[in-house]
Length: 371
Image (cartoon, rainbow, N blue to C red; front, side):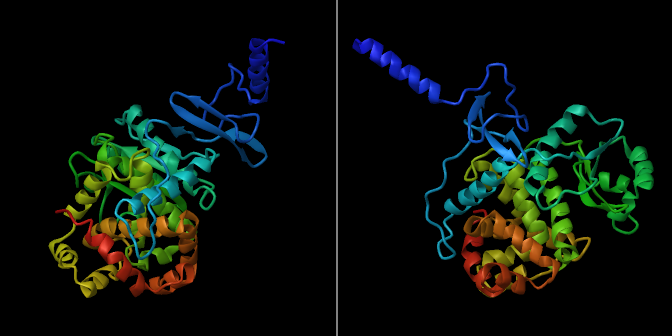
């Protein structure tokens, strides 16, 4: 047997050992596949066959052009590296997200008469990522979204009566007034109406920048309440802070967590903080930092306190997810069912007190203050 024939037989036998995807098979997230672990690349995304219950399905896929290599910067509670922490936190969340199959439920949609379907489709891409991420812990029997734009005021007020949406508003407020708060209209609210988790959003603004995080942010609030209970409203920085972190992580996905996107978003959130809070952070005084971290966001939210939580709470969440992983943060939320004392919760979940955490966190936060 000559050398050419030997080479041909070697290549042929190797090809027989590789798993094959039929050329006519439809490879898409949630679609059926034949063997766990096989991969297929379609439109620059690599899909992996995973087991979901008793079925084999394709996961949501990873984009080759924007995926980032796992971080190799060593980080610890004593070394909160400014590049290593955001990268590791992002890697931890996206690894979990990519292991999830598409959730088996979708929201009931109520869409205002002037809303464009293309904008709804854009919003659902981010919202679906949040649904998939939180599905093992929060999967309500029913979940509804309401999308409106300017011009739908009369429609939303009627729908509010029909669906009991007024329970999600501050006393005396209306959806029409809320829609006038920003121009273009981009307000959003999550809550419970008639015991149904509900999300209302105005879509006049373009789907870009910070607006991409709105759906995942608000759905994270529904997870918080559904999994951790109402104690979340009494816990400093957690409610808005963790929703802010998962909002930008899932909303800006896929992205480089050390890119301009993250920096500009953090700077934008810091600019919305009131002058007293800015002064506390800029002072780099540890006691002032601790006092600011311990302020409680009341139920319904004092906007000034919430604005602080978006920024500093998002950074605190990022550090916890980077150092201790996604599952530990879920446990942190679950523990809120029995306590609203954040020091007790931190000790129970992570093994350290509130003051200890803030002392370690402070330099990382101070480094994020815009120059």
